[in-house]
Every structure is written in C-alpha cells, then in structure tokens.
Length: 195
Ligand SMILES: [Zn+2]
Image 1 (cartoon, helix red, strand yellow):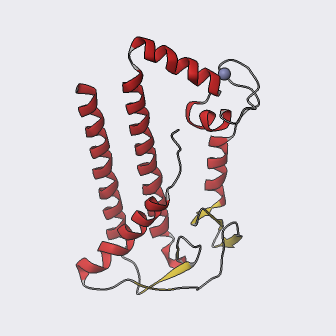
Image 2: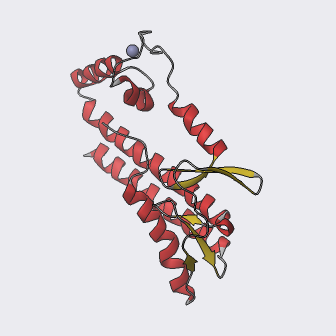
Image 3: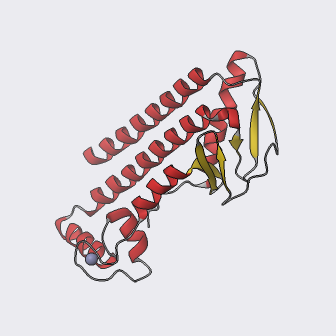
C-alpha cells in the first residue's frame, strides 16, 4: 500500500540538506540553540500574521493543514460506484485513488488482464515519489523563509537560527536539489517503461 506522507528519513534528509551544506561551503557555521520555545506536537500558536502548528514534528501553517485536510477528506460514498465507504481499506485507497477499495481492486484486476498492471504500479510509485519531492521542496522553502522564527526538529523542539541564514542561497540550493531529484525519478520511470 502506497502512502503519501513524510517518512522519518525524509525529515532527516531535509534537515541534512538545510544544515549540511550551507555553512560548510562559506566557512561559516549555522548554529542553533535548542529549546527557544517549547512547542509540541499539536500545539497551535500565532506568529507574525500566521497561525502555526506542529504536525508529525513539522512546523506548518494552519492554512496549509487545511489544504491537506481537504485533500484527504473522504466523502461518505465512493464517487466511482456510489457505495458507502466504511471498510478499513477504503480510506487509504481513497486518499490515493479517489475511489473505494473494491473499485481499486476491480480497476487493478482489469489492468492485470490487459497486462498493464506492472507499468501502472511503476507510474504510481513514481508519482508518489514526485509528490514527496514537491512536498519536501515547499516544506524546505517554507522553513527557509520563516527561519527567523526557527526550525522545528523531529522531536518538536524549535531550533533557532543564529548568525542569520542566506535565504537566497539556500532557496536556490533547495530548488536545485528538488530539480535533480525530479529528473532522476522521471528518468527512472522512462527507463523502466522502455525496458
Ligand atoms: Zn467504489
């Protein structure tokens, strides 16, 4: 079952990307103090003109959360067959396919008969990877551009940047890294399709 969400290692990678290179190449170290604020998972607070919370250890604005909620919001009945979606597997399937588990099974069964199933799974995986890259990029850019207020570590502790952050440089680095990653995923996908 494919899940669209941040994995622990993604967050770690994000931190490495931010913390790792930037200081080293210029010879200055980006330091941080722990426990500037004591916000925890689920806390909601206002900072600047935005309302923030911490979800899965990631600091994010409430509006962003709302969009996320809208995306995973599940209607009562399947848009495909009209049956009420109340089974355990309906929810994760709806999140990815926008239809109930039964409809997904039927759809995938048809693909198997046509011999298109393998390619479909590959596409799905690549799409999922691209989605993660997109989320990661916007998360990182967000983190950089709000970095005056700090960066939330995995355990929910805000790490305040000291000595300033070269926002422009870091923004470019993140965009570049995301671009490289996207190219790689797309290339892998094309290679597999040809094979
Ligand atoms: Zn259905």
